[in-house]
Image (spheres, rainbow, N blue to C red):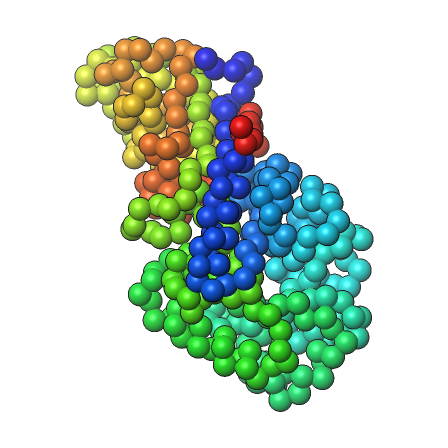
Length: 359
Ligand SMILES: *Cc1c(COP(=O)(O)O)cnc(C)c1O
């Protein structure tokens, strides 16, 4: 039954997240790697860091990665003192509000800002993304004169893979080689390398600390192959009303879909403001009682419409599943022309969120 006043119910399986972390920990160990942390940026990929972080910590995770210091403060509040909370985008000394966050140093300016503070830091080397981290020339300069690093507690030297989701891409081996060469020329420090997909590339991508994100949340780290992770997210939305329309009746904004036969149209309480991407207009599915239900017309801000002519049991109050075991966030993303990461991080604030814990 629908819950009055909600746009839908988002169920997050914390036990599955913990099991996925354990799977990745064991996988990294089998590759000869060390610890496995968790990327929990963007509110744990939209699933709720306040719930996800304690579940990961209870499973044994001791290293957490966020993008911004404000996210890090929220993670620290959920976690308590102790585990590493590293801020990928960096922050200036004192700018963590006393939350005990660890900066990732991405530029010579970052190194200079932290030099001599004695702080524990991570150092990010760019080995092929031209995004964050020391450039090849900056790595050369630091190798020639590592003095700026003295007085810093270098916890990890890290780099990030550009093409890990394409196992045969030559960038993967090239980045592994550049990372090894750069590390050999810099002061000795532990390494941090693989993201989720990187953990499925082989032992050359093992390190002292892996940083998976998406696979923890059930996305497939091996695109094109069976998903080795447990599903985590289920999204169900209520049918608000069912309308009987004659053939020839248009449905929704732009009148982009017109009934070819007498039809039953179910109007459902979710839209692009809830992260149900407008790009899904005209080519998405819901699931109900093991069957596919086609979306018709455009996705509106707060409403979507489904053709339930062939599904007489769907009535007001029925719940349609938009994401679940039969249609994963990766599947929805493919229909929208995007990636599962965008589907998860777009999930809106209007869903009632339920967290399933270990039994
Ligand atoms: C987001 C991120 C990760 C995690 O990536 P996934 O593909 O979600 O596993 C790891 N490292 C860095 C630097 C990141 O930005």
